[in-house]
Amino acid sequence: AIYHHLVRQGLAARCVQLTGTECTEEEATTVHTQRHWAQVQAVCDEGSRSIGGDTYANEATAMCARLSAGTVLDVCRRVLRGEVCNGAAVVRPPGHHAEREVVMGFCFFNYVAAAAAVAKSEFGLKRVLILDWDVHHGNGTEKMFINDPSVLYISLHRYDDGSFYPGTGPAEEVGVREGAGYNVNIPWPHSGMGDAEYLLAFERVVMPIARSYNPELVLVSAGFDAAHGDPLGGCNVTPYGYGQMTNMLRGLAGGRMVVALEGGYNLRSISRSMEAVVRVLLGDAPPEVQVPEGEEIEEEVQEVGKYRAMVPRAAGVALAKVIAIQ
Image (cartoon, rainbow, N blue to C red):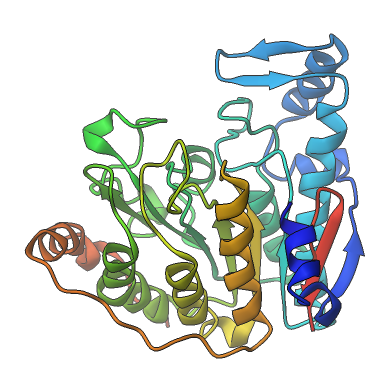
């Protein structure tokens, strides 16, 4: 649905289009164990079944998961080699809930985490920003880099005092050991958050921290289940909001940015939201920022802002398509 929408809007023709690529065991095990790699294939070989109560698989799922991960890695490498300025990968199944040896939340291989690992190991990057705006906290990504200062993980998500899936991501969770201060959670207390809340959080918390960190690459776990109309997220972010957030992030890392689809369960919402993101990546000017003020919004952002002092200062499209932006 997303790819066909981009075609109809004339955006796919403005991009370098890449076909999907399966990841290898070596690539997946940059963040997962060999046992996890083998178990994903073994479980899927058993046919249609549920895994852990919230994830389902069939005979084709392992291949689709490899395509998702490999495609994101392909786009990331092309950006880092300078073949394209930035890129967007529309891939399913998603990845940010997958832990080193855990399949959960529809996620099998954590491809954004793998992209960060590849950026460091193959290209020598010292500072990678992962910005996760999926409505659900990326527990897998957080765990993988919780003690790693070379990856700054920032997540905006519904928390609802721990009752919203997966129940992780409180503001006070800021990293451990060497990674203390490099994990930033912006946990919304309830449903209904929209452009105003997200853009104010970007202005007051996300962008000051990101600029201080000075990343060499920006990876976005771009779930669109916080979008207006999503049946699971209960939030109200519009394409305008996603476009504005993308535009702000595009000012980091010399524009080197990879946007990878995560969640999102309303086809119209995710298609229009990705359209807004791709337009900004292509260089189309977004509308002027207009952030409504509100007492509740201010209180929520101020609560998260208390933890800013803990953050140190730093010296194509798939369903088997990828769009990489020139």
